[in-house]
Amino acid sequence: MLKNKDAITFGIICLILTIGICVQIKTVNISGTTTSTNKQLNNLKTQVLRMKERCDEIYEKIDVSQNELEKTRKNVTSNDTELKALEEKINKYNILLGYTDVKGQGVRITLADAVTSNALKVLYDSTDLIIHDRDLLLVVNELKTSGAEAIEINGKRILGNTAISCDGNVVAINGEKVSSPFTINAIGFPERLAIINNTNGYLKELEKYGIKTTFKSENEIIISKHIRGNSFKYAKTIK
Image 1 (cartoon, rainbow, N blue to C red):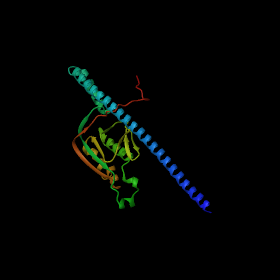
Image 2 (image 1 turned 90 degrees about the vertical axis):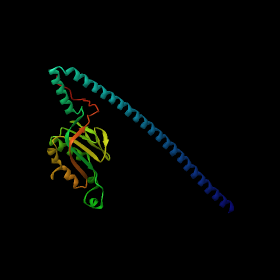
Image 3 (image 1 turned 60 degrees about the vertical axis):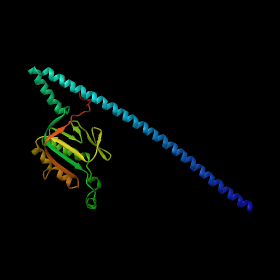
Image 4 (image 1 turned 135 degrees about the horizontal axis):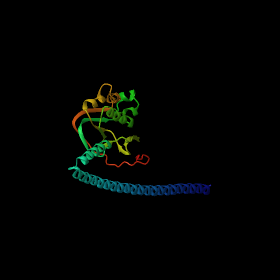
């Protein structure tokens, strides 16, 4: 009888030791995997940062080259009426393409997600209380319809082919992530641009959902040029 008890006790001890060893091995494996994953993530982050630094350097060189080209062009065309007219045409198209800094009278709009309250939770779905890509698109389109000549959102110049899309909890403008609050600058005749802030304007529609909006006319709005080059894969010029 004692032998049976000893055997049972010994068996329980062996089982406990076996479970302990398995748990320890699993913990070591998880720890090793986590360490390896963290190392890979750190390496990827380092590569991304290096690529970003490299891209910034290239764009800075492009910016310097463009400034030098502009100076040279002005010197060449200063004493030639025909070339000066051509220079003015180039400047006009650069403004349309967003390749130059611009300033002028206009408006500044800010949009911020609603501060969630119990009342808003009851009335609306939580997704209605935040600013989406479609909201920014509607604001941009309404500003364009009202005669805006240049627009930017959080420092990102809006061009004819600018993509504004949803990217998780944020919005991507040409692939670059931006988040609330959004500052929208638009150059144009302020009284016409103010339509967006009228009773039937889209800003008032957003305010119904608790979205915070501000609208202010400015004597001078400065909008920076688009610094990322556009590449066209399918569109070709007709000669």
